[in-house]
Length: 127
Image 1 (tube, one colour):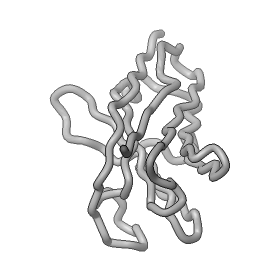
Image 2: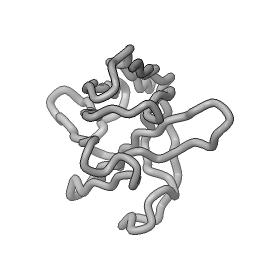
Image 3: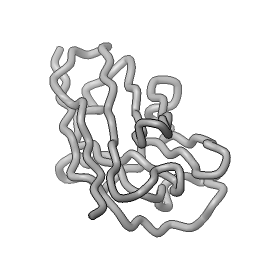
Image 4: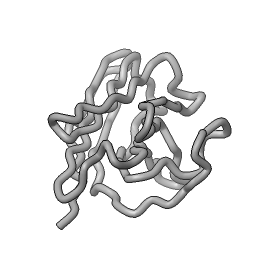
């Protein structure tokens, strides 16, 4: 079976850091473009970060550029989202998926299918 399992969420102070993990089983994450997404109640899904299959190019939402870093560890079959300088608006359910969707204007692929999704991990921010 295919599973994507996110972990690493939690409660963090404004300005703090968290590292989220997206661990895969049943598929190799380096065979897909992998995206991190977040969902805030009452808002549409937001593409946060993307790393591509072929060249490991990365894409980020404008709101997180310079603060978040997406990376892939092929040996661990895991994609990470390192989040720094967290802001209150970063609080959300974060989840990963195969594919990056239509969220990046300069995305090199323009193939938006997203077959597999994780269950998400929650990030909460306190002042």
